[in-house]
Amino acid sequence: MMKALKDRTIRASIFLGLALIVAAVAGYRFRAQWVDEPLYPSPHLTEVRMLSEYHAPLEGTPMDTELYIFDSGEPGGTVLICGGNHPNEPAGYLAAVFILENLRMTEGRAIVMPRMNRGAFLHTESQEAQLPNFFIPTAHGERRFRHGSRVTNPVLQWPDPTVYVNPRGPFWDEIVAEHPEIAEGNPGPGRQTLAGVDSRNVNRMFPGDPRGTITEQLAYAIVTMIREEEVDLAVDYHEASPEYPTNNVIVAHERAADVATWAELLLSGDGVAISTDTSAMHLRGLTHREWGDAYMGIRPVLLEAPNVAQGRLKGRSTPEQIVEGLDMAYVRVQMIQKRLNERLAERARRLEERGRIPRERTRRILYVNIPETGIHIDVRVARHVQTTARLVEAYNDQMAGPPIGIADIPHYDEIIENGSGHYLHGPEGEPPAGAAREEE
Amino acid sequence: MITWLYVLIVAWLVYLTIYNLYKEEKPMDQVTCAMVTIPLLLRLFGIK
Ligand SMILES: [Zn+2]
Image (cartoon, helix red, strand yellow):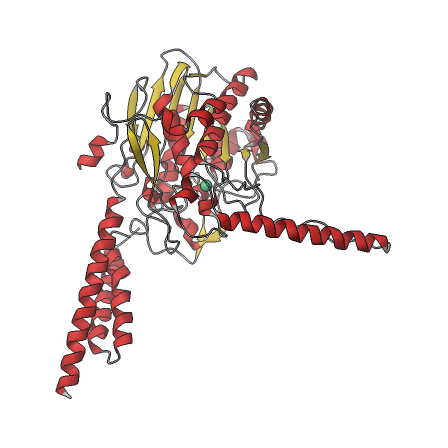
C-alpha cells in the first residue's frame, strides 16, 4: 500500500518535471515572437509615430504600433498603406514592408502601417502546426519575418465570448446627421453576431470602441487616425486561401469603386489579372466598409492574393508552402475538381440528349488556379505593390482628391524577375526602426 | 479586459491539475494531467 503511493508520487513528479520542461521550451519559443523584427525604411522617411498618439490608452501596450510617415513637403493628398491586419497572411505583411523600404513621395504624403494588429504577430494560429517564421533571401542575407495569427494573442484579451457582437462606434450618427444620403440601404456599423473568436479579429470590429476590448480600441485608434490625418486613399493588404471565393481581387467601398475599376483596367496592361468587388453593406466591421463609413473623405480598398498556407485543405506545414506557395495537396484537390467536372459535364450531356435539363454542370472547390510550381510570395507581393501603384495613378487620373505622387516603387515585372528580397534592405546604413523596441 | 479574477481562475486550475496529477492512480491519467498543465502554465505566465 505505502509502496504504491510512493511509486505514484515519484511517477507524478517525473511527469510534472517533463511537463515543466515542455512548457519552458514552448514558452521560450512563443516569447521570442514578442520581439519585433527590425525594418529598414527608405531614406525618404520623414517621421515615425506611434498609433497611441491618436488613442492614449494604447500607449505602452503590446497593441501599439508604428506609423511610418513619408512627407514629400509638397501639397497633396494622403495615402495610407497597411499590412499585418491579419499576420497569418505573409504577403500582406511583406508587401507593406516592401513599400516601407522603397518609397519616396513626390506629392502629398504616405502613412505606412506594416503591423496593423501587432498583438496578432505575438503568437501563431493555435492547433494548426503553423511555422512561426518565414525567410526571404536578400543582398544582406536571409531576413526573418514573423508568421503570426489572424487574431490578437489571447493573453491580451480573454476569455472570448460565445457570440461576438461588433461595435457601432461613435462616428455613424454624426456622419448620418451631416450626410443623410449615406444611410440609404446602409444599416451602419456593428450589431452583427459573429463567432466568439472574431472578438480578437480587428477586421470585424471597425470603427471600434474607445472603451471596448484592446482590439476594439486598436480599431478605434486607426479610424481616429484616418479622420484626424484626413486620409484620401487607403489600401489594406491581405491574402486568402484558394477555396475562398474572394481572391485576386480589389474589394472597394462604393466611394472607391471608380478608382478601383480604373486601376483594374491599368493592371490588365501590366498582365495582372484582378477584378473589383464592391464592399457589401451588410458585412460590417471590415476596413473597406467601415473606414469609408466613418470618414467621408476616404476611398478605402482591400486587396486579396492567393495563399495556400492559410487554407483548410493544405498539406503538412513547410517553409515552401509560405514562400513558394507550393502545396501538393492543393494540386491534388485541383485534379479532383477537374475529374469531378468532367463527370458532371458528361452526365449533363447525357441528360440533355434525353431532353432533360441538368441541375449542375460545374462545381468549384478552388477559386484560383494553383500551378504545380506554386504561387510564389514574390508574385503575391508584386501583385499588391503594382495594384497600389495603379490605384494611386487611377486616383490621380480621376482627380478623386488632392494629388498623390509616389516614386521608386519597382514595376511588377521587375519584382518578379529580381525577387522581392532584392528590394529589401539590411542592417547597413540607417539604424533599424524596430531597434528601440527590441532593447526593451 | 483581463481581470485578476481570470488569472486567479487559471491559477486555481493549475493547482487542481497538479493536485490530481499526484492523486490519480493510473499512469495514463497522470500523463493527461501533466499535459493539461502545459497550456495552463503558458496562460498563467502571460505567454500564449
Ligand atoms: Zn485577411
